[in-house]
Image 1 (cartoon, one colour):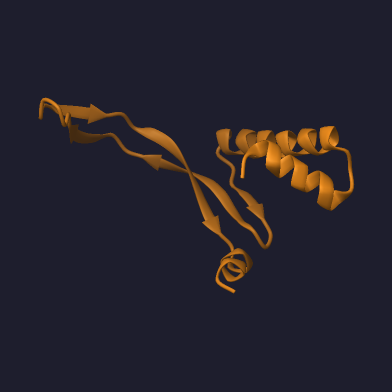
Image 2: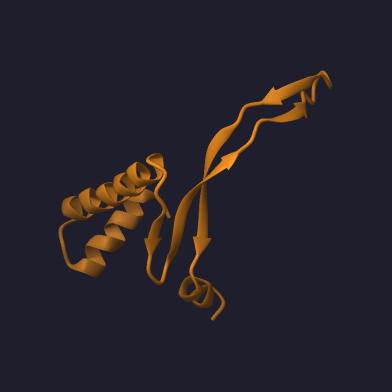
Length: 91
């Protein structure tokens, strides 16, 4: 499902116009991103938890030349699904 399809589904289920639904979807994503950028985790009851993990610097190899390279440390997004989401997928 693409973002536009998600917005259309939200519009249909919430009985609102598609422009308002698209704005709501964008605002939701932006709020999650901003919270994660500041290091907060976002808990959505019955859905899951979005958080940020620190990945340390590590050593790797260039597959073409087999030379060692350094992979920079990074902050990476994580998502842990909640039990109701897991149950819905396995029902």
